[in-house]
Amino acid sequence: MGGLAMNDLLRATLEALQGIRREYVVFIISALPIFEIRGGVIAGILLELPLWRVLLYGFLGNIASVTPLLLFLEPITKWLYGNRLADRLFHWLFERARRKAEQVNRWGPLGLMFFTAIPLPVSGAWTATLIAILLGVHRGRAIASIYAGIVIAGIVVSLLTLGGIAGARSVAAGL
Image 1 (cartoon, rainbow, N blue to C red):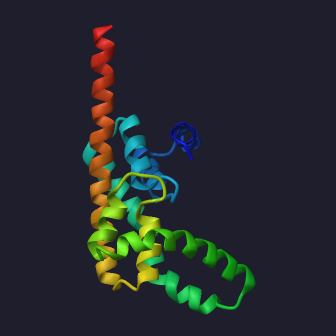
Image 2: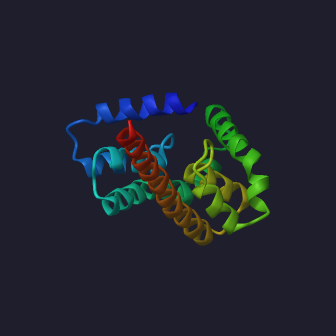
């Protein structure tokens, strides 16, 4: 999805969540695999929340969605093994993650952290979780690495967003 389409999707999501407490909006957006903390931070800044709240609720939303995956996806896939529909879904999910796994595998848990932290499409905590399961990374190490990556991603996106807003204001002031 391109940047413009993602902006439109975030805007539509914000509109759909109107009337909900702003912190919860950040939490919900950060829990969605298409946005994660990256979208939650942008939404929180647009909603004019204090940065510490944006980062806190963004982090909590992102971990609320990936922690159950880390803990239960592997046992669930084993339990559903043999079901045609489930096999197709898991094959599609894991194949998508497998393409990125080779790059991450060279760095181990540190690779998971960086992969999670990089604010690019198809990187982030959800894909890092699938990669951790594929590579058999110890759950504790995977959780620590992915959580650290979420924190870094939140800080990076905050700096980029706030820097972009400050730059736009300075350009506007010069007009």
